[in-house]
Image 1 (cartoon, rainbow, N blue to C red):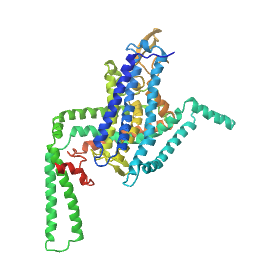
Image 2 (cartoon, rainbow, N blue to C red):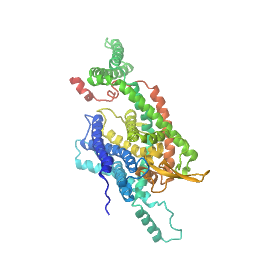
Image 3 (cartoon, rainbow, N blue to C red):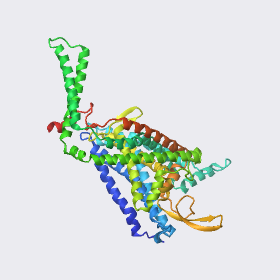
Image 4 (cartoon, one colour):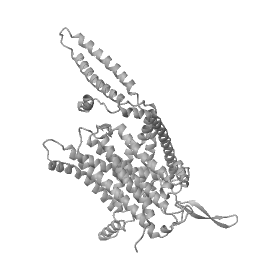
Length: 539
């Protein structure tokens, strides 16, 4: 029997998601093009970066759609709507959302293990004498290592069953039959879950490094603003004049034709480099001072400060909620062998309380959860931009407006993908009640022991609800099924959250102490080529 889903459900849930898909690709195109180098780029790397960033945004955007769909199945009085009364209809909607998650997670794996590494090495092989075929062969040779890692992770997840194995005295055939049954019973879900969970461990490191710092760096950057271009230009002029005077003093010493000492020669070379950099900064500051865009920013400065204050308050609320959740899990959780799972929260959670209470004003709760998710993503972007891309203590790439190399853009998209995978776990930790059941309610039977009377109370859905009364979001199901299936991953996520909180505090202190940014932040660096100033020189 075919299941007919009302058009109102499709319009309310999936049509906005289609709009989000279009917006995600448009934003990704603008963002990548905004940071892409004007002198060092390639179409294949650019398209890959745009697609990777769009997939990242869509993976985040699916969570509010998931929460909305399960909430839309019920009315405010706790009863299923007529079209959702049939369990088969609800299951069809849940399966559609579940397959969307699977598709996006598989796309993330494809980009992480195949497309991004291939395009990275394809660009690295770029040379005047190299052909497209030779570049493809060389890139594929390096990409095979990533494919092997992915295959190993999938095999470990598939061949390491979590169910009780056969008895020790069983035959080899029985053991092999058991493995195939395990793999077939979950349709390879264990293999995918292990690979995704392994990626989320890397994502947790990126979340601790970039997102935790970005959550304070972005708001304080907006609150403090940038330095006035005119005042900064005058300071640069003074520094330039001082260096020119020092250079002239050294030059006067050798007007009689004497040979310059090696010490003075090194000092002259150093002064020439500094003067060259200061002159470039002066040109850029003069251009910024005359720019109409800079004048628009001055007009919008009050709004920027307001948004900065709102964002830092949101960051502090998220910090307090995560802190209370971590304390609650270590005090009342099931221990490290169960991934510190918390059956029933005991301590208040500010974000969860706000989300549950805003359900009364439609669609305020969906706007808030969407804002929190996108805030995390944009803070991650801000953290990567301000810190750059590091490998341990080695700074590999900088993210700069119209000066970012293709390799850096690919790395950035890879890091954002890993962070988004981990964001779903952090969201479940941040607001477990709302993320699991949305705005659903059900009628709970309670007994008054004094009068021995039974009465019904309308309460928000929770894990104690009778089966069939409430529908869990697919994201919460995947979180427990994917990321907490092995206790090791759950324990790592828990202690990783503590690391996130510690870095947040350190980032908060650094952001408070740090001075205002330059009006030409990241526009002028000592290692830039003169090509970056071509437009200014022509002007």
